[in-house]
Amino acid sequence: MASGQSRRVQRMFARIARRYDLMNRLMTFGRDVHWRREVVRRAALRPKARLLDLGAGTGDLSFEALRHEPRALVTAADFTPEMMALGRRREPASRVGWSIADALHLPFADQAFDAVVSGFLLRNVTDLERALSEQARVLRPGGRMVALDTAPPPPGPLRPLLQFHLHRVIPALGVLVTGDSEAYNYLPDSTERFVAPDELAQKLARAGFEEVGFVRRMLGTIAILWGRIPG
Figure (tube, rainbow, N blue to C red):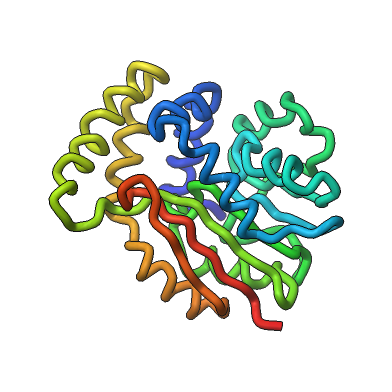
């Protein structure tokens, strides 16, 4: 059963669904497209690989995976129907399986997938350890998990500038583009509360992943993290 916080996040994404992709491009100066390509590359998909795009939203990662490996078997899962409804209108949506799913209670069998990818999901879950455990459960031995997410601005001389962009520029842009102040105040607040990439990597290892690593992007405010199930 979804918690109150989960329902709040779900309603928020439903409200901004139509402008979500545009805001991602604007906030990241278009770099999010390149980060998704890196996520897919690190997933090391082979022909007929079974891929789960978790927190898929409008399907950006799913479609990138099919561009990279056209023979992949892609399932896009999200708990916001309004987001996926937009994705289903895009090409090649017919080559993607769409599933309503809660990241904490995945409706998939053990070892169902060769890879799990996500874009801006983990920061939004109410139980991070459970979400990682569920991803580990549905991966076959040797399967890979790759996650893209925001990260708290790291210490250093640029931190004040990064925080200004996060707490001032993004909320103002969000209101201008989407008309929704809550969503784009939630983003910086949840980013600041989120674990740093090195701590997230430790949680991934405790969830049963090996060969865990991460890279920072966009002056440290974005992280791409990965791990592999033993076997």
